[in-house]
Length: 235
Image (cartoon, rainbow, N blue to C red; front, top):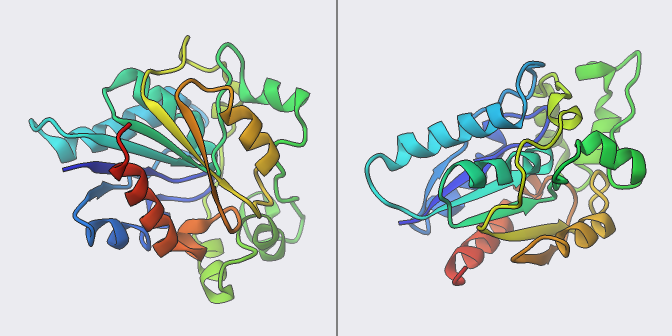
């Protein structure tokens, strides 16, 4: 049986996947969704990957099982690290950042400023970095039902930038196949940039999906069906 390891994005936690997990389990899959150390300045992609691998190993035990690692947004920077450190079947990037071998993602952003749009901080906001609900909803949750978006906003955590400023810790792209779910209406990660970067990756395939940056909130059933379809196709 295939195991899905669902890795949340920046400022969020593993509960982001709570609406997708039942969709996968109802179809017979096992799921882990660990909390990553997004707010730890000492933690880089290797540390994020180690937490993911520990969760995978705890679920798999001594059994040999296929593993699909799914990373949302900034967690995309650690997905290839997981694949480089542990045997997995596939990498899936959901509105994901894609690391650049030999460089930091911050360096890449300096040359590609339109790749990512961060919500603008404010001196009056109640979220991390003074972010307001309105700014976060515009960037992350514009197609999410308002009460759910507000609940998600209250759960936001601080965000360290080590994973963005450190040099990518792997020296070559992993052998596992990669699927890039590009959100057509994403206001945080530029869909055009995602398509362009995905085409550079060995064994990569772009899959388009309607909606904004947070499909696990806005379209959990659709995302669950799509992940199931990815699993059913021979890698």
